[in-house]
Image (cartoon, rainbow, N blue to C red; front, side, top):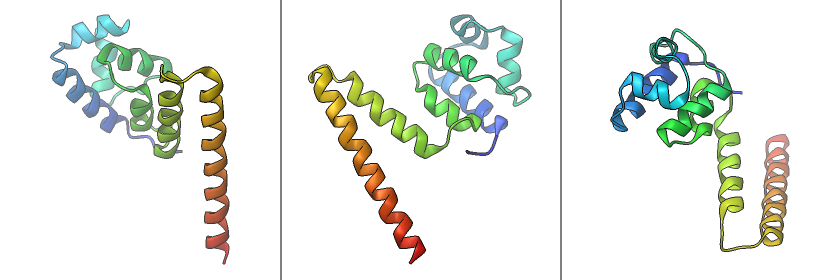
Length: 123
């Protein structure tokens, strides 16, 4: 798991909030958290829960997984896998059976590549 860097998370949140042209108060209200609490997160004084990060991500219209990585809750590889799965599941042009088949193929490729990588490092 990635190491905790709450300051980096706070800086990133502040940047995203400013890009969205939201005041601290507006974002706090949209995310359902208190203004002082959000301010402490931005200043790197508080470590928010995954639930709070999800609420903030939704209010900012950004990926919650990206915030999880920034907060050290999720590592980059896990985020990429989750996002890939989410894209497949969200695709309206394929049916549920096709989505499940794609996910099975994706999983088999990941396992095959992990096994190959493990063999090459053992050799």
